[in-house]
Length: 347
Ligand SMILES: [Fe+2]
Figure (cartoon, rainbow, N blue to C red):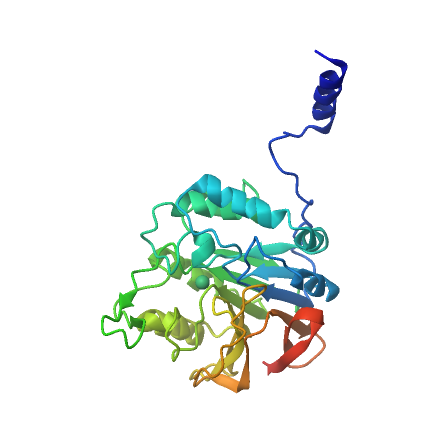
């Protein structure tokens, strides 16, 4: 062995690392007793394109980042390829700065799941799920590793400042979309189909039963309130959408905000549910680096004050814990930290 190769082996031994494995920034640990005041979120991110938006996400010093799907564009059944794509994302220099400073959680949508508009029939869903959890640095001992699907819940804060983030898996158990053969619309409502699957529904009901929670955030890759556009949405499964609303009406959480991605736009939608003493908002932030710049007009009967953009964007929730009742300010921001629009939500 030459001197150089001895030195190389020595370096490998003392560093304890495998030279074939890329090294990533050490993630900021999730501290569940920490009070969350600023939460950032977003979706639709092509791993191989520049990602200047992270600088502006980081500028806001969020207490938590929530990925809302299409976190990378995987689109493959080859798990080696999918892992390489996740590794490319995780090695992005600007994203690494976020990893170091801000705890990260997330859920997938279709492209990171592995297939466009994918459903329960995607054959590599179990393997893909594990790769996503690895990307998110979810512990190998976490309970989610022992069950099917990617749904997760995290509780932060103490006493009167408790936030629970529920991340719904809208892919692993989701029934097939009904294609519109007349081509007038992309999809017709699947009147009997489901989005979550029975096990996830029961789990969600349990999660929403915690009366100590002051604010629930429910994230899902696809939009839950809008139903007018022709793309993917919970409204393609009307029974599931109504079941979600019925569950919220039944459980009466003190506060809840829906978060979604997928659409390459940002918009704010609102619905009034009977019996829920506040408006229910669906905040869509989509297009970290993959946005629909020339979208023009798009009808959404639930959109608030025409709050919709097609520029690159991320979302921020600023929780005012001193307000009585609780107040949350939603901001949709973009490059140069530009504020595109905001929304106050009172509970
Ligand atoms: Fe998507």
